Image: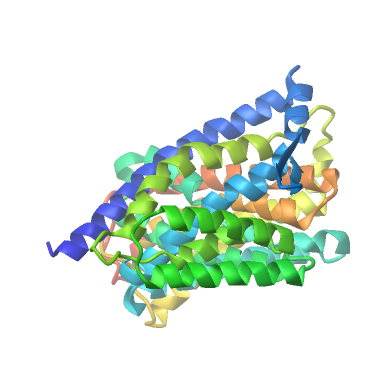
Length: 406
C-alpha cells in the first residue's frame, strides 16, 4: 500500500478506536451525572458547577463559574480537535474528492435540515423556543461510534467511516451555525486583536513551523481575545486548527501528530467532563407531561424522526439520482440503521442548547429532550443494525431488492 494511503488508513483506525472507546466512557459519565443530580449529593454537584473561578493577570482577567470554564475553555480543545479532523478529512480523507464526499455530504445536509424543520414545526406557536432550532441538528460522533463499537462485527468498517464523514460535515455545519446565529454581540477592539493574533498564527503555519509551542502560546492568546470579543470562545479552537500545517519544513507530520496526541485527552477527559457537567438534570417531581411540551418534544422528534428522514432520505435521493453511490459491502438497511444512530445528538446538542437559552427551565427541558431523543434513536438504531445481515448486499442493487425496512 502506498505510504500516504497507509498513513491515512492508520489515522482513521486510530480515530475510530479512540472515539469508540471514548463514546463508552461518555455514556457512563452521562449516566453518572444523572444519578448524582438526583441523589443526596445533588446540592454538592450543582454547587460545584456554580463555583466562581477567577484567573487574574496584571489586574485584568476572567471570572466565570466552573460550568462556563468547562463550556468555554475545555471545549475549545474539543473544537480544536474537530478542526484538525475536518482539515485532515478534506485534505487526505473521506472528503478529499467529490466521489468520496458526495454521499456523506448529502446525508449530512439532510441530517441538519430535516431535524431543524421538525423542531420549528412543533415550536412554531412558541416563539420563545425557536432559538433552539439547531439543537437536534447535531450528531455526537463519540456516542454514535461507541454504540457501533458495542455491536462489534455486525457493523462493517465502511459503515463507521461513512458515519465519521457525515459527522465531520455535521461538525462543519454546527461551527457555522454557532458563528452565525449564536453570537449575540461583538466587541470590535477584541475582535481586531483576535484577527491580529490569527494573522500571526497563519504566518507561523505558512512557515511550516514544526514545534507545538508557538501554536499553544498564540492559541491561548487567541482564545482570550475571542472570549472577550463576544464571539463564542470555542471557535478559537477551530481558527487555531486552520493554521496548523500538514507537515513541517523538516517533514514532520505536524497536523497528524497534534491530532494523535490530543485525541485521547479529548475523548477520555474533555468530553466526559463536559458530559458530567451538562447532563445532570433533576428528575424529582418531574411531570411526565413535560415530555410533550414543545421544547423537549421538538428536540426529541427532531433527533428521532428528523435525523432518519434527513440522513437516509437525502442519501437515497443522492444515490438514485446518480450523484453518489454506497460504499462496497453496505446495504440500505444498514444506512437506515446508521440514520437512526445519527440521531444521538448528545455533546453538540447540549452545547448549542446552552448557547440558545439562558433560562434554567428551558435548559433542563433541552437536557430532557436531548437525552430522551438520543436514547430512543440509539435503541432503534441498534435493533435495525442487529437485524442487518453482516456483509449485507451489493450497493448497486435498488432499495426494494436490498432490504425491507419496517
